[in-house]
Figure 1 (cartoon, rainbow, N blue to C red):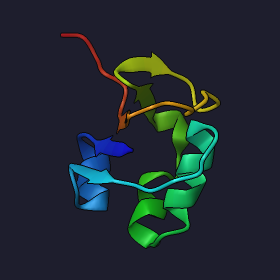
Figure 2 (cartoon, rainbow, N blue to C red):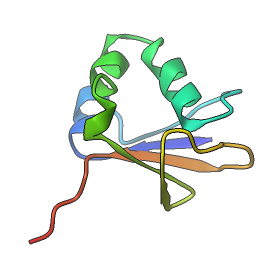
Figure 3 (cartoon, rainbow, N blue to C red):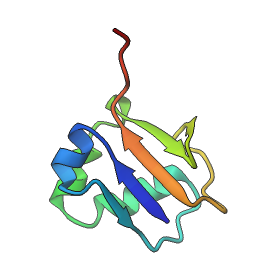
Figure 4 (spheres, rainbow, N blue to C red):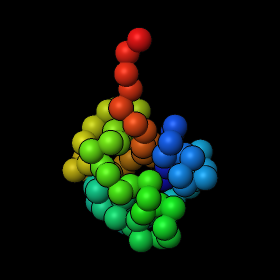
Length: 81
């Protein structure tokens, strides 16, 4: 599965995108797997209220299932202007 990081999430992790082997059932399970990797992931996912997530380009919640998903993207909330 491809995992994409945008804005400050990308800056904290140091990657714009990576391919992840996972058995995660939900987005939250994936987040927990990523947090366990190393400190930069823990820092990026420390405050989930400051993050949004999309699965296969559809905005969703952290309890969304990942079965069949090809892509997960993490990004801060967007503001209008």
